[in-house]
Amino acid sequence: QDQKEALARARRMSAEEELKRRLLDPKSRTMGIDANAILAQIKEKEERKRQEEERERMYDSHRVLMDQKAQYLEQMVRRERRAVAQEDDEYRKMLQRPEYRREFDLNNPSGKKEDLPARVSDDDPRCGPASLQKFDGEDLSATERARLQKAQMETWVAQQLRDRDDRRAQEELEDRIYQERQEELNFVAQQMDEAARAARAELARATRDFNITQSYMKRETESELRQKELEDNMHEIQTHLTSDLLNESLEATLDATGRRFL
Image 1 (tube, one colour):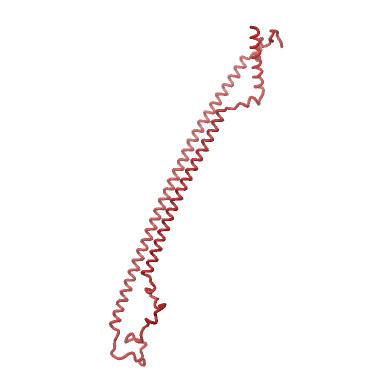
Image 2: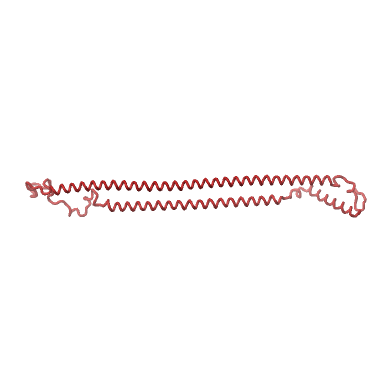
């Protein structure tokens, strides 16, 4: 029985010496690490990294979609421009031929062949007394002149009407193409604006959720740290209260043989 008590006292003394050494050693006292808190921080960092990568992928996919839409609209505009240019070429070939121009007679390659004869009418100023081209009582071109004048007038009027209708049709086509392009651009701009608003809302929601989670985890960590500190303090107080060495118990002054020592 005495030997058991001696062994128990020796164990208590050894434990008290170890506790005293730990309490007096700052390095040992500060080396305690909360593994759960470290793991929680690592998990939180990984989750934040995953959310950032997910947002980057979402932005990249949205940008690619917008680029594809912009390329599609640009191709449509180029096709419309080519169609308008082709229509302009057809219009010039059909209705703006060189022989229809008023100054064509100045550059007509067949001008000599189509030149006026020596006498075209009774009032031809080229026919003087010595020309032997005009005789009293003659009016050889009256009927032909009237017919040509009437045909020329009809041609001019018809040409003016065709030019006016062509200009009006061309302007309407250009206005329609411009209006369609504006509507398409407005639609794309609206989609991009809605997508941007949705992305901002999603980012705000993710940020809010992350802040809430962060705040909750911080409160939990602080609560756990406070609880652990309280438990450590209570344990230390209890150890001090029950320590034979600190309470200067008489049993702590006896050695294994029962003799008292100082």
